[in-house]
Length: 225
Ligand code: DX5
Ligand code: ZN
Image 1 (cartoon, rainbow, N blue to C red):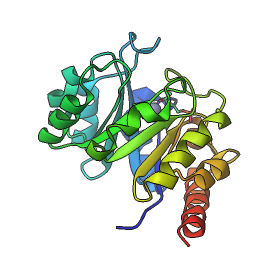
Image 2: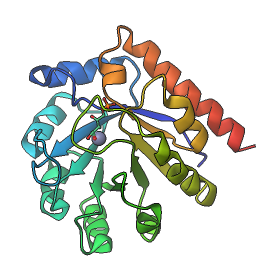
Image 3: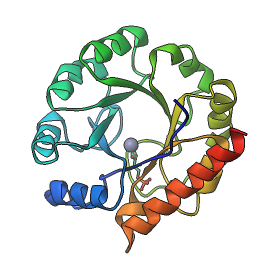
Image 4: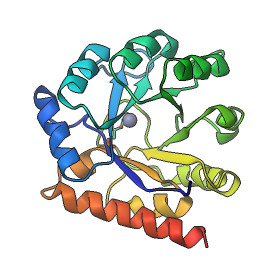
């Protein structure tokens, strides 16, 4: 299947006391999936939420595609709980993991898609070894831990390298991606776009999501010629 542009807002900077309403609003405004940032206060210096909250959200929102971005030191530990909570894609950081292939297998056996994430200081060849086992690679464009940080344009060569070598791979970017930074992500080859504050804080979320998708769709058409 040909590459598709997908826009997945991160709800990290939304009003988390209204998680279901905020999520539904994003979906009504055209979000293709929800990017749920799970942090353990250990792999990153921040805490968010875990599978109990994801499960409650799933009870309210039956249809949407849920990606959990697992910023945790032991991603293996949460696989079955997240599958049970109704997660569709389990995207985890490979940096703290000894046996990445084994974790990929377990995620798949639990019925979820596999996403492999790397932090800005991790070289792209470290994740390249496991690409055959992954549905998606996430190139972080900020240090994970907080929303609202400045986009790191110097991560684009990693995206470009992957796109040049893996034309059908889903490549996701996350961190500081908004209307002012989308074009370079799109041209480098990213097709799954996480945007937190850029969408959440917008007056017209629908218009922003549409523009983000438009940028990616035109870039795909250009480099697929
Ligand atoms: C950062 C998270 C991101 C973040 C994105 O650690 O993984 O998903 O919330 O938010 P913005 O788009 O505001 O950088
Ligand atoms: Zn994230």
